[in-house]
Picture 1 (cartoon, rainbow, N blue to C red):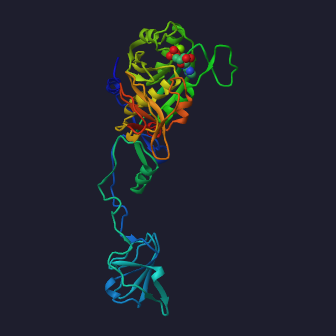
Picture 2 (spheres, protein in one colour; picture 1 turned 45 degrees about the vertical axis):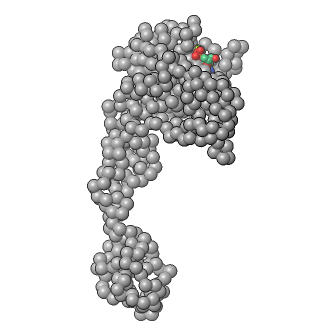
Picture 3 (spheres, rainbow, N blue to C red; picture 1 turned 90 degrees about the vertical axis):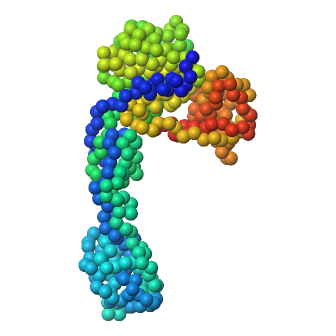
Length: 400
Ligand code: AMP
Ligand code: MG
């Protein structure tokens, strides 16, 4: 048996980033992986500017509260004023550049317009007050976004704030999805005796899309060597990765191993984890399209997709960070029976932040994945009692 860490290391070793980089406009860049670090060519904000609507002035001209100053100019946002005449105030609005010579802005609530175009300043201002300094957000030349991150709304806003209209991103990984099993029917179809509905494809597709992949769902494939080989050939032609479910155990109807071996190379792994022991990893076709065969049991398929497929595809898409955050929390439930394998138990946090276990941890019980907010990563051979510390990984941290 392989340990989880060995299996992950082998997958990551084989996960070379896609070579193609393309420039996409900001509007199309959300969720994509940045291929080159980005730097700012300018200061943000570009000039010292007013943080408030009010009056720009020289502190030295207001020695006491109640000083009246003539208003010498008006500077709305979007225009640039003239140097401030000594002994005067400039009417100024939020975001407008502070005129040379002014060293403070007094907010309009503390300034009262008076006769003959003057304004009564009702506080003694402090130098620098209500002025946003040039470059206080970003200095010219600074790195604003490192390569290898997934771009989210804030990243796009920051890129826009330095004037970038497009960003270089890695091509999305193209993933073909195959569901094996003669017993599978599709939702919407009547269920014949002995059949079950195909659940796996309906969570795998959105999971893979959430990782940023372009998914082609090739549907069901019967448990038949020729049919599987044909499906693999078709999937390999246009995709970077083939993900299948089912058929990787060693039963008579499990033809995935033979089919992948006939079309390429395959290693069948027994990983010392629960759920998710059998997993197949290989290559198909002349182009060496990667192949990952997930177990058929829905929970095993779900958990291995999050813990093993996710890092593989994120690394292939150029991401540098795929390790989920882990938290030490107290267990609210006990887990009295230690297992030889490392377990990923479906759990959620109660009002006190303690991890409660779903009562049925069976690898076919998909309700546990809906109920759970995370996985307890329980090392081999460990039983625990309520009140013991356990390691918790939030499902939300494994989704993107
Ligand atoms: P297998 O790995 O093919 O032996 O499948 C293990 C178990 O998972 C069997 O009970 C299958 O019926 C079930 N199973 C396999 N594929 C799916 C699927 N796509 N959706 C729901 N259950 C499945
Ligand atoms: Mg099967």
